[in-house]
Length: 422
Image (cartoon, rainbow, N blue to C red; front, side, top):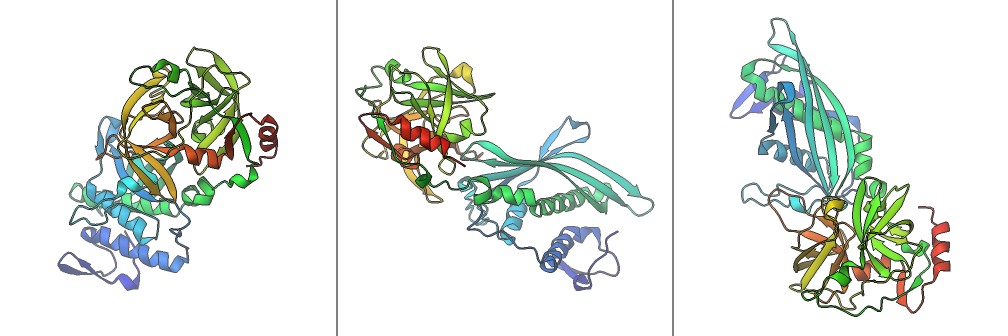
């Protein structure tokens, strides 16, 4: 049974007022739980996260496994809206379900996607009461859309007394789900992962001295006529079981890629279009913009020229990468520049060219084979398809403190590597 605060002696359940005299009625459990937790929050003195300090977040879905694990069910849309409202009530930087009446939902704009899987539900009935003590286990996971990777995963157990009668199964599941969700929001590890400074802290390029590199002198090539030479300027980037893509910035051995492809790598290997595998070193990176510079001790025969002009909406674009693993390495997809976007003070090139896991770090090139950006992430949302993003090449050079020139300054590169404490 549930004990309740004197402040909750009267609750409005639908159109009927219910007077509580010692125990809460099952029909009002969800409303009661919301009110009780609101009062508990107010009395706890817990500080809600600041919108300025956390990444944008939305809730996607809660998945339930039936007994035996043979059947999988997805929670109703009301759950998603309830959880988003709970995030909003607690001052998280949440997007989604902005206007239910008119169907306004900006969930696709969220940097972080949050969801969960119910791993187990065990209830011990209390004799002659219709109630039981239930142990509700959920594995929560938060996915960073921009990095296309999970940045938080944790199993949590929520225990609560609820009705265990068949007639009240739906309400009891709602109570357990919302209670478990509020338990998550009180978890320090979860909130730390959501913090901008704790997850993807902005890295100032001032810690790197600007370095000159020998600009690629390859002539632009019409890709509708000849693609091989452009593919020769791209590579597969491998970090253990993780694979992504990159491109040759200069024949002097510098490769640009996405930082999340090589993050926390013990060993980095690149594979050329000709099949040669070579070790690579991480020389520079910027976490916030998700770009990185690798150095390979070899002279390449081919590099990709950089575009001196910003991308324009409507221009044709090719994306080269390794979708779904090395078996599909050096795949090419074609589309257009769908738009130039700015989210969270970051500029992106939007494209409808096909982008999948493994494309990260690969070049976005114009129809003449000049690099306009690096593929970083794809929008993950049930209602959208064909929305991918890249970092403009001008931003890549700025964040890695690189300047095209006549020679490659290896000495400054090495100093930057040794002085990097990040």
